[in-house]
Each structure stands twice: as structure tokens, then as C-alpha cells.
Length: 166
Image 1: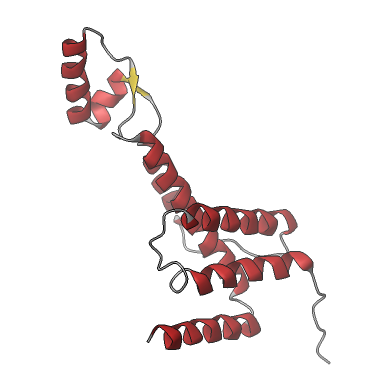
Image 2 (image 1 turned 90 degrees about the horizontal axis):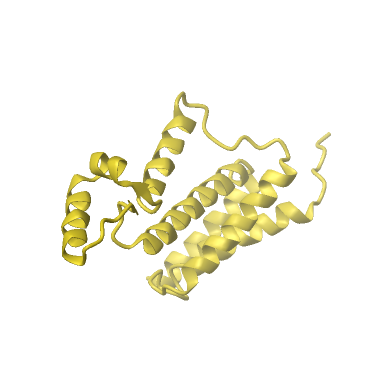
């Protein structure tokens, strides 16, 4: 006898968020509208937070060795681009940026103490948050695509999308 799983609102909400994002990115917004990406990112963060909060026994990542270390290193290095760093560390990580700041400081008559590697730190931080949203999307998809029924629904949505776009 097959035991059916209980209905849960949080699983349904996560699946709706995933289907909404997968179904609307290419068609309605052409994946180029800058105003929609923060909304998608916040929705994916919310879905991921619900996944973490309720858990439900999902494993969040593949079992490969070093996977978490590689992901953590990637996000740490990309976050370094938008975090203010002292001049000595900046000289090691980005000598060209440090030299440019030194020359600009000579012209302005002030020496910068802390600066970022990025020339546009707010945009770099927004990009970092977007990458974190993509990681949340990956975790949500890897948790829910283990269900054959949801996998079929996602495939039907993507096939319908392909037909509409063709």
C-alpha cells in the first residue's frame, strides 16, 4: 500500500515560486528587465528560507567532496569585491586599483584609507545578492526535483514555454 504524503502549504508555496520564476523569466520579461530581477531574487530567498525553516529532510547539496568549500570560497571571493578593505590588503589583492587610488589621492591631497576592489561596490553587492539568489534557486530545484510528479510538472511548463516561444 502506498502512503501519500501530507499536504503542506510551505511545500506548495516553494513549488509555486519555482514555477513562477521558471515560467515567467523568458516570456513575460525577456530576462532583460532590470526591475524584475530583485523581485525574483527576493522570491527565491523567501522560498529558500522556508525550505531551511521547515527542512523536511531535504539534503541541500550534492554529496561530492569539497562542494561546500568551493561554494563558500566562491561567495567569499565575490563578496570581497564590494567590502571596503584596508590599503595594505588592497595592494595585495588588486595592485592596479590600489595604485589608481594612490594617484587619485595625490591629486586630491588626501590618501584613501579603506576602499573596495570594485569600482562600483553597490552594483557588485547587488550582483553578489543575485548570485546568492541563483544558488537559492539551485537548492530549491534540487530539493523539489527529487519528486517525479513535480519534475513532470516542471518539464511540462518548460515544454509549453518552448512552444510559445517558437
